[in-house]
Length: 202
Ligand code: PCA
Image (cartoon, rainbow, N blue to C red; front, side):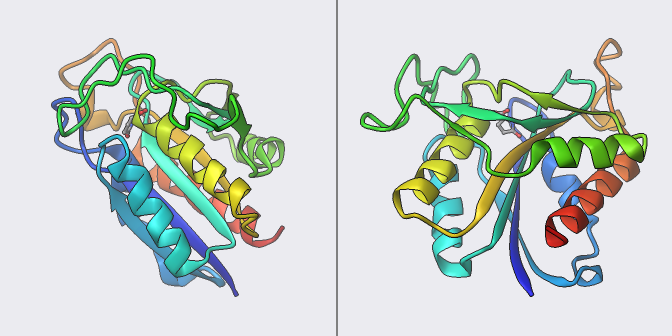
């Protein structure tokens, strides 16, 4: 059976929930023909990547699916690329706000996700779930985590595939931001289930 690590973040920037971990909580992990490990990650530069990389060395997953909130996006965003820069516009949960700093001084400029994004996009579209491949994971903690995990896999030649998925707000988060888009929890949980099934069958 495949080993799968799925991570979501804790709430940040004044939110009381983070949809990326809310939807993981509603997964029935026993329903899959795989060993599913889930973890909540702090929205903190370096602490987030250290926690996930430690888990990777313990669990030795075949597949790593990292999730994060991208408030304002209108679809499930399959991130194509992580870039070697930290450039925060808001503080992380420890008040850190790095500006124009490389994540890895000797690392490459960028890494592509190693998940089959086009396949995931087409499966989700066939189920009428709003989805798109995104060409930027931003320059905040999510991009930092994605870059760090792909860098770790590259330098250690790890036998795993990994990628990052940004999700929109949940409806309860947009009650005070009526101009912002949200997606129902049931749709996001369904999307995650389809992604897991597709990756198990690879
Ligand atoms: N989203 C942030 C960090 C944590 C999260 O859920 C981001 O997009 O960087």
